[in-house]
Image (cartoon, rainbow, N blue to C red; front, side, top):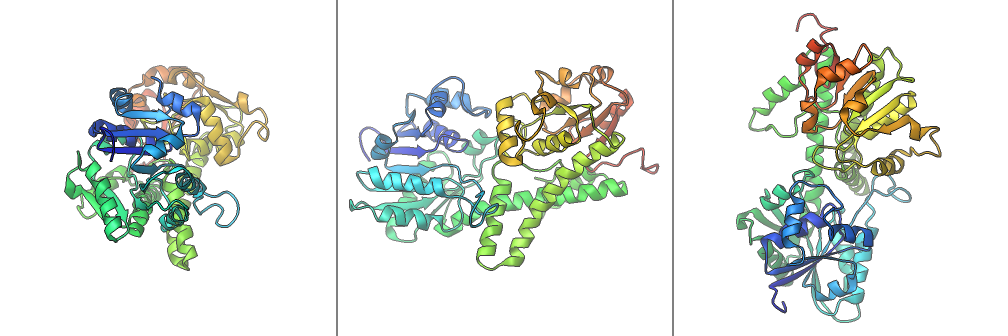
Length: 475
């Protein structure tokens, strides 16, 4: 370690994980110098401005406190690698679109490129930390790339997966359930793991810093996300049964969740899960199982994805069915495009799939989301759904991004809540009802609204896993 700093850290990748994680390390460890590097000058400029490139509650305050003190953002990757004692690799590992494993396997190209850059420019021994979510045994590939450098330097590779939830990333980092560090079970590997553990131990109780072998750490991240997604798909499968039988999924969730063996978390039925992690990591797990000949295991986990796809399709089909089997030419208000509240992230958002289905029905869609830019919406629609202006006639005029919920709902035949933003609970629904075409439909894809109150106003309300009083007279 050198200069006046106890440790110098370089993080390669200035995205949703690298930026917040390094900002909190800098805040909690004033004697640690942290620099986040990226190839994108636009991304780095945003991190160095008041208008950060990602929306995360509490993040601006942390960055403002530390930036220029011991937190820096730069495109001078070579210089920062040379300065660093510990180098985090925190780059995107998207699902492969072509080639072997297409549609399931993770593409670790960016991780490999980072390792090659480190081997090329490093001028001393380094600890290299996988922060990206990667397939098990990726560390071996990184280690091999680093090992063949011709300078004689030693690189110890660690796995330190993130367990953040977007929207609560800062509290998750400030008070994590656990910090997981995997390393080689050699004296050198254990020493490197202890060096990283000491950084976290500045603010995380030492008993919450877990150390394992490399492969357990890498696989734990995939398994954690698979288990969480599995719970969402499990309760969503029951929501369909509730709608058919007259049961209430919220009552079932409460009854089941009071069992300590099950717990209450992730038992809220919804239009489906989204985000950058759940689907990608399960598909990665499926591919790993297939690779090792564990076909039954692969099929088991793949059904979590199939159920999620079913739930999204079921929601959009129900909207059309209840609106007299046609949405053609009808204005439909979509409240929320982000995959969850308190983030602007639209990756794999369920809202996108509902919008796609309604476009195919000929609907005129008006979207309001307090944090999602129209440009980001189109980029994700094109990347994930293949919907763009060149293959979808009159796309631009078919989808309007509204400045507020009231203009989005004005004259609409139906309103669908697809992101659980708190502000949607507080809207003046009497005002909205008066402005809508009649009958006025509400489809609550997050079960956040007061359905009885809405029915008294005059709405026809349909919600996930909730019995329809028009179909059951014995509720």
